[in-house]
Structures are given as C-alpha cells and as structure tokens.
Image (cartoon, rainbow, N blue to C red; front, side):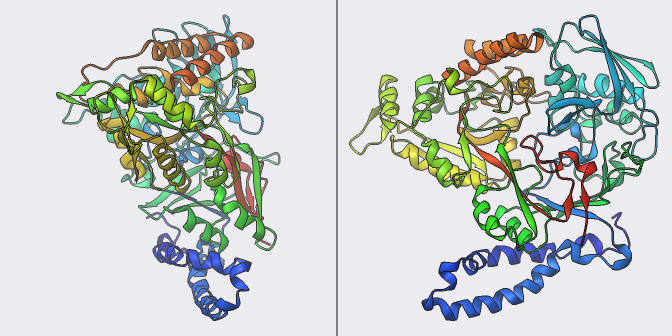
Length: 636
C-alpha cells in the first residue's frame, strides 16, 4: 500500500462509518425535522435520540477522513464518493460513470465544460489541411508519464493503432472515430517526437471532440507499459491487454498522464489518488498543478449514507459531477449556511434516463436470448408506445425528483445545439393511460375480467424490469413505473440489482427483458454513435456479440434502426452546422416514433460543496470536478 507513513493505513474506520450511518439515518432525519422535534408526545424520544446522536457523533467524527491526518502530515485533500467499486483501471474498457479516469488521463484535445469549447490538451496546438481531412498535432514540450518516462508521439500512435483500431480490443472508443459508411479509421503517422499526423478518409465534424480524452473521448495510453500486453497472447489466444490493469492491479503499475495517479484501492472502501508530480499544467505564476495533493474517493453504496457522511464532515462534495439525488436538496438547503457549504445548480443534467426493452430476436447456442412470447410484445411498436403513454413522467419529477427535474423527450442532451424541443415538432408521450389501452388493443392485446393484459394467445403480459440498486432515485422511479404500468394491465417484476451484474446482462449474456438506466453525454451527438450504430458496443437494445463472445443466430436489424445508424454517419460527415442540425433532427424524430429507448425525465444538476473548496466553476456539463487541476482546498 503506497500510503504516506504519517497516515493511518487506508483510513481503516470507514467500515464502521458505513454501518453506523445506515443505522442512524432515519432517526437523524427525524431529529432534524422541527415537527418531530417539538412534538410533546415525543419529548422523551427526542432526549434519547439526542443522547444517541451525541454518542454517534463521536464515531461519525472518527469516520471523517480529514480527522486522520497528523499535523506533520497535513496536506490538502478532497474527499468525495462513488456508489460502487470501479470495474477496471484500463480506460479502454471503461463503461461506467463516474470514474477515476477524468482525474488520471487526458487526450490530445480537451473540452471546457463551462463553455463546451474544444481546447488544447496534451497537444499544445494543431493545424488542419485539405478540407479538414488532414490534421497535424504538436505535443507539448517535456510531457511525461507519472513514472517520469517521456510521453511522445510514439504513445499517440500506439494508442490509436494498437488499441483503438485493433480489432482484437473491444473498446467503445473505436465507435466514436469510425468514419463513413464503411467505418474506416483515420490513418496516423509520427512526423517526429512531438508531431503526429491524422489523415481522414472524408470530412468528420466530431473529430476534435472524439479525441478529447475522458469522459467521452480517447485517452492517450503508455506504450512502454502496455506494448508487451498487446503482443503477448494468453492461453485463449487473445491479447493479455484484455486483462491488464484490472482492479486487482498494484496501483503503481497504472501509469497515467493526468493530474492524479492512483496510489491505493481497497474494494468496497475507497480509492486514493495523489498529485502526479510530472503533470504538465502550470498556473499563471508558473506553479505546478494541481493544487490539491490528494483525492480520497470513498465507496459508499447508499446515497443516504453519503449525505449523512457529508453532513458530518466526512465528504467535501455530495457529488463531483452534479448528480446529487434531488431528495437530499431540501434537507441540505436548510443546513447550507450553518453547515459551511454551498449548493450549486445549473439546469438539467446532460444525458438521458430511459427504459428500454430487449429487441434482440437472436439465439445463442440454440437458446433464444429473450422468451419468444415476450419478444413478440417488445418488438411491437404499439406496445412500446403504449408503455410510453402509460408512464406518468410528471409524477416521476414530483416524487422521485422532488420537483427538481425536467421531462426528457430526446436521445440528445438539451445542452446540445442539435437538440430539438417539442415546440419544434418532436413527438412527446404525455401520460394517457386510455391512449395506452387503445394502442394495445389495436396491437391484438385484450383484457380479462380482472383488468389483466393478455396477448392474442392468452398469455399474461408480465416482464422483469432491472435497474442498478445503488441508485436510489432510479429505484424510486422503477417502483412508480411498476405501479403506473399495472394500471394498464401489465405485471412488472421490478428487480434492482448490483450495477456490475446489470452490466454483465447488457454486455455479455444479453438475457434481459427491460432495464431502467441512463446515458451520460455531452453536446456532440456523435458521442452516442456507439449506442445508435447497429454494430456499436452500446447498442444495448439489439446488441450484437462483442469480440470474443459466442455468436448469435437470427439477430435482425430493423429498417428504422439501420436508418438512424446511417444518419449518424451522415451527421458526422457533414461540416455545415445547419445541415448537421437537420440530420440530427431526423434521428430524434425516428427515435421518438419507434422508441428503442423510452425517455423519461432528467434531474437538475445539483452538488453541495464545502466552502473550503475554492475555484469552483460549476456547470451542468462537468459539475464541480471538470477543472480538478484548478480547485483549491483552503481550511480557515
């Protein structure tokens, strides 16, 4: 464990914290509620609870990571949290958000999440030629990896040729840079130690954003560390790279180019990152960045537990990415002034939340991925439209989002200039259970005397809805969706499960009925190309097998599905902004007609941040930590 010797080893008491805070959360909330506090009938209970909480406060204070520093070891640190353990430390295989990669890796370009503008990253500059089909990038002078080795054009060429373009490496990054109808990759070559050239087969408008590093672009990875794992094959004949930098890797072996490097990971407890001494950024006075020495990323599987730890001083942020649960807003807003923190908000969160049915008609090893009876329902457009009309989305906002949200009607984020609104003609599914029933009967469904929905063969309409159990807001939404759909005769078996288990169903076994999840995206629609291309790695509603997985027999791609994929290719090819907008308008109209994703609601972007954290430039796109290298922690 590469901990500094002055620190208690890995802040070991967090196990106590987790158990304790889960136990006291209900009484703690009641204790802070004035109605409860002043009730004469509960005066004795108040005294007992106060005594209990006073004793608990000692333990909660002991759970505060800030309390474990000795004066000799006093360094600036930021403490935040995530709901679950990371799945990998290899950026090529990342499919989750939030993640540590925003802290640890960078790309040739970067996105300013305050303005959404593209700016220099590892490349200090670039030039374009030949109608923007040839780009030359010049790397910053003196770039180094976290182990002190030089970062050169060789690393850039290695990342693209040996990882992103490699057919044996199933990275989602490749989908964002496949160009044209044939999915051709750019050609890349080294000009000298600091310059690389890309030649594109045709104009590709998203190019500079596609290479902008985490969270959506391509991060540059170290050739001197990973080259051998690409060359060496395992007993299964696949590159060892596929199992390189898993979460069981010794942290010092994960070599990075970002502001922070990983120094320890304790499963179910925390990741600790420390300042990368070789990071390239400096402030205007020439001081090396970042300012904050250490990031402690606690693993807290309950948002309720997380808010208790924030209130007790154990966390500096409720959420670094603006995804604080809306149900915590009212409580924290009352405590904002006396708690020495500020709540930031900035419109709806980027991305989308949705439910999606499994439309894959294929079989694997002779076994259908989806029960054929259910598959007939799911593949009926009228069935999916009936479900959309049957969900009371305004009630989702009022209840699950505590009124702090907006309706989401498009697969493109509202922050994007390519988004079209209902006022511009986008189809909207307002709550209308009568319309749902009419569509279902038009599709051949009937109702029995008890109001239960039956298909044409008399089968009861019943399916399983999954979501990730760690996300309490989604669990609340799923419970209401189950209730709403019961009103149109459907039996929904709502089953929250661990996020990693859900990802395995969506990406590997492909055996699921329906899920409630969300996609995070920025302003560039092509960021979602891997979800909309029929061959994309995140085309979950009709997933093809990923490299190395058993084949699927009988998978079918609908005409509308292929058309959306074609339009995404056309939209990426078009450099005229007005024409691009028209293309992406068409994709949104098709998506809303056929509903492979039934879009729901988006919470407002919210974060509570301790006043000791300075230089916050909050935005709905990047939350608090998008400019982590500029943040400062100032203890008064």
